[in-house]
Amino acid sequence: MKRSLFYLLPILVLGVLIALFWRGLYLNPRILPSPLIGNAVPTFNLPELRHPDSPLTQQILIGHVSLVNVWGTWCYACREEQQTLMAFSRQNVVPIYGWDYKDDRQAALAWLAQRGDPYTAVAFDASGDAAINWGVYGAPETFLIDARGIIRYKYIGPLTPDVIQNDLLPRIQALQHEGT
Image 1 (cartoon, one colour):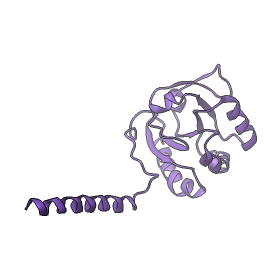
Image 2 (cartoon, one colour):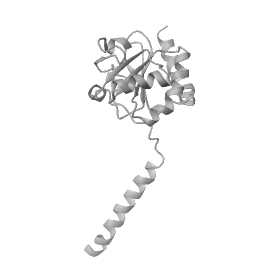
Image 3 (cartoon, rainbow, N blue to C red):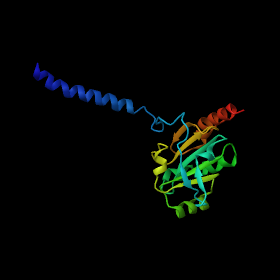
Image 4 (tube, rainbow, N blue to C red):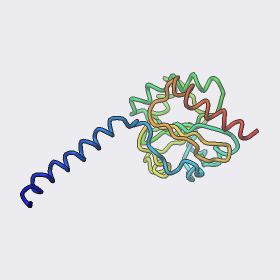
């Protein structure tokens, strides 16, 4: 009996591991549940990238539906989404606020000058400490904020025209209609 259990236990453990790995193959890595969905945006007080003497706080997100896009010059995927953000910002659907995460101010300013600036304002979080309260894992990440300053959705990864059209725009339009 002990001997058969000795051989059976590794087989059972291996079977459980295989089942977990198999299940993991079908999960979307861009969907990470955020405990902040449905809660007010965390408080922050950061300098504005272009105007360091002008602090930005969570108050800029109150009164209108908006996006907060976390990015950094070191982020390769942020380069991928930059043109998409530029095109979307020209549509004037919602204000897009940038959150420059763990970056160098001069590099970020040069980035925006060279690639275009889709942002209404950019919070500069050189250490990344303030982003921790938002549950930021890295960049790019985009938060959809309602007019009351409640986080309603979080997208992880570079925004594409397809993501904006099929994922963000319907949510934005629904939130804008809530306020009317």
